[in-house]
Amino acid sequence: MPAAREDADEWAPLGPGGAVGEGEAKGFVLGDRGGPKVILVRRGGVLHAYLDACPHHGGTPMAWRTNAYLSGDGAHLCCHSHNALFDIETGKCVLGPCLGQSLTSVAIREEDGIVLARL
Ligand code: FES
Figure 1 (cartoon, rainbow, N blue to C red):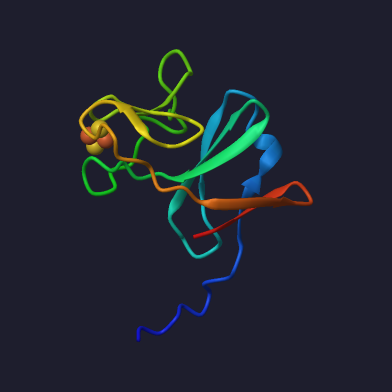
Figure 2 (tube, rainbow, N blue to C red):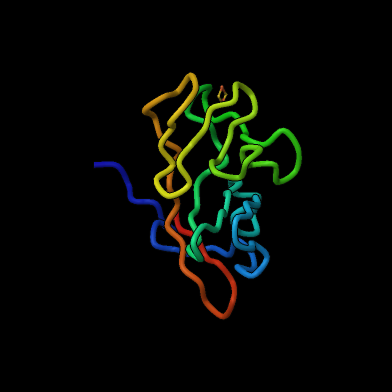
């Protein structure tokens, strides 16, 4: 049986939830040890979190410049490498070369205004 990760139940800080306004998406590095980058996106007042890793090509970063995670109309998350569009609420690809695949959802909670995430 594989050993369980020691930190499997640890929540690590992502960033201030207030930094992501309605209809915005921003990327944050998880924790203080150079963890993976996580996208926070707010829609309808709800924060959603996904790994910044496109399922089309082995986890390619999604943005073409800092925090450019949304499609031009702001309706979807977008991987700008091949213009795949992802549903903000579910992370599922709705258009593009990874149609039907999904971004990896990340568990989050907010504590004293700081978003914590657990992989
Ligand atoms: S790497 Fe994301 S759509 Fe191709």
